[in-house]
Length: 206
Image (cartoon, rainbow, N blue to C red; front, side, top):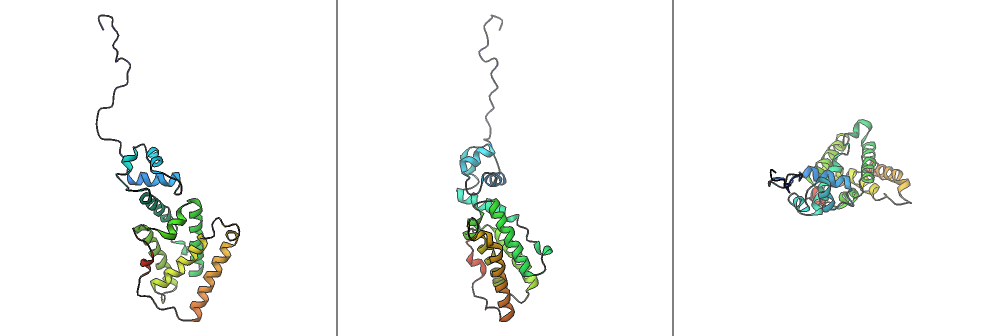
């Protein structure tokens, strides 16, 4: 200044003009939850990860459970349902799918609990539908309900062995024994009647 007095505002960073608060996207929140861990993430940690306030996160999801379900579904979407290219029959296909689901659950602790009980997102139901359709390519005489059983029971049985020091080492053998038993029954007796309720009623849908 001309009178020799120092400008008290000199050197200060310019204040950000008022405007809209920092925003994110649901996709960013899902990715952050997966990166932090399905079984350990908090909404506070997710907010910090994407650089927004926790209150902003609530603008996209109402609860941690809702984000957990979306993130778990995103992880399950990466399952290779086209594994039939590597299989020579429905038994080998189901064995491959179950093994790959276990690998996914091991990479994403918390996914097992989602696959056990849901509530399931639409993309998860779509994955089950794709698996059922592929099994029925080998077994066209089998309805959707039984195809769901043929796929889902070996998957769930295998997931139950994760972390068990006695069962986990023999999980592939147990899975193949279950699949072989179902295959032998299919070959030796007529399929059970289709129940009135759809297999979808077993799933807790969001």
